Length: 236
Image (cartoon, rainbow, N blue to C red; front, top):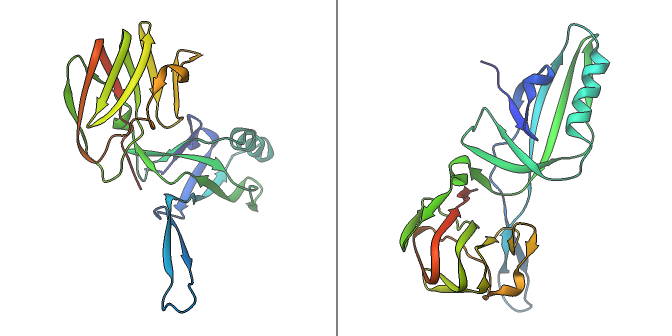
């Protein structure tokens, strides 16, 4: 069985390319600074509260019976045009995906007329996300959600209800004013909205919801019929 990767929703083998090796299985690096202090032995560690991006690269073979240049153009048109992050996953780790962007050029070493070796490098955000974390968890009454990972997640929530609503995640309160039908919260994008309408002015809190590792108690006050949560479980 040949190995593959998927980027922008397209599988690599659809372009006639075959992965020879994946060049990185590294985890993301914590963003830490070290500061020297006169008269003090050893540096002070300053944790900047985030993880750095990392590079994931693949060495691939482009093998065609004909039209090598056309196949190469198809590959470039797939990978290069937009400078944005897109989901990236592969056969080495099919349970997780990352968000990556193609980095640099496509260095091509043509071995034969219709055969070339290419190294693809993706600049990726630090976390790997579980596909299973995109399944909606629906609560029609107060309940508990367990985060199975060691890292907090930044969920998407959709609260169905009307009027003034207060949502509690553990002991943290999120208040919403004068809701009509439903309100959506995307903690990763740090945005509160309803469809395409911005509702950040209706949300009162000191931040956005997170799901901590382990048990998370979900409750609310107000006229709420249901809360849908996409937990977005993640790991390094």
